[in-house]
Image (cartoon, rainbow, N blue to C red; front, side, top):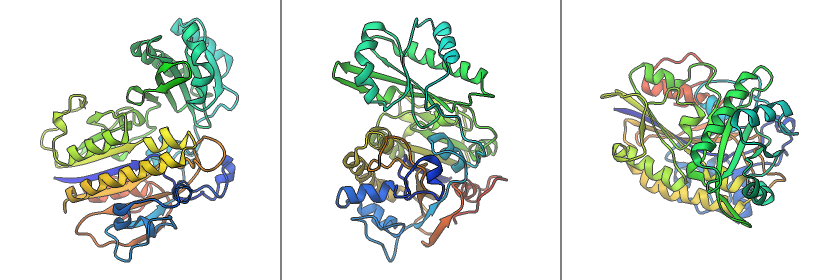
Length: 405
């Protein structure tokens, strides 16, 4: 069975896009290079073998004269710098209009409708904020009032944070579904990309988000993606991490959520060993018997969620090194019938001012043990990956992009 594996290292950008100033980002933003420089070098022996050091001047990662993988950078042609926009372009959808953002918070009529339909009696926040800072600021008041904390960021997100000992996960998820319905009913003016459930735990002064119970309620893809084409052609698509949320289950046959990069990497290894069926939390949306080909789509979110948004360049560097250590187990599992693509969806440079995503190009590595490596140069769109999936698996694709092969 032919397989293609796409691993998205969330927010590991590799240099500002030419239009970065339009998004209020500095031309110096370069998540991977700046994280490596901040840490006085990164220890990434497996990435070095693949050829990551050939993409840019990454301290500690030497250029390789005989890399295992083809290497390059990709530009984003969609408008935006968020997770959904990046992943959709990888899958072949180009956004000509960005999702709306809310630098002054959400309109009062949206909040009023949310309060009325959820029966929550009131809310806290309704401001752009760091997800950790707002828990410090409003966590105690939330405990006292039981009002949900609503906040946004430079991305198009309606985030709802609740302490699990105050508001049950079931209730939080229901409130998110209601928020999604409200925003969808006003989508002509308020095309908000994602509603995100942000459960947290802990006590005053030490509140912590629970990554494994986070849920994203996204708008569905505006048209079929390469994932849908695979399923229509009889293949299977396995989403690991938040992939099923990003695509609202469209084009997903099986999925499993993760709480950490460690979980995501270990689940990928199980998928490559054909042992994923043993996982208790694996959800099957469509039973595919004896698929002729398969896409395994993985999002590793720690780099972005835990470290990029928290300006933690040290933690970011360690997270990349952790992924590198798992590559030592993953690469030997890639057969002549498999194609491994490692990339990112945007930037989130923890060394520049602010805690929001940065508008960046992304690295791309393409590995198969029998294919010769090449310099793929600067690609014009993330959708080159969708075209590559189409070519490798032999499924139809009419969108933009050129094959990386």
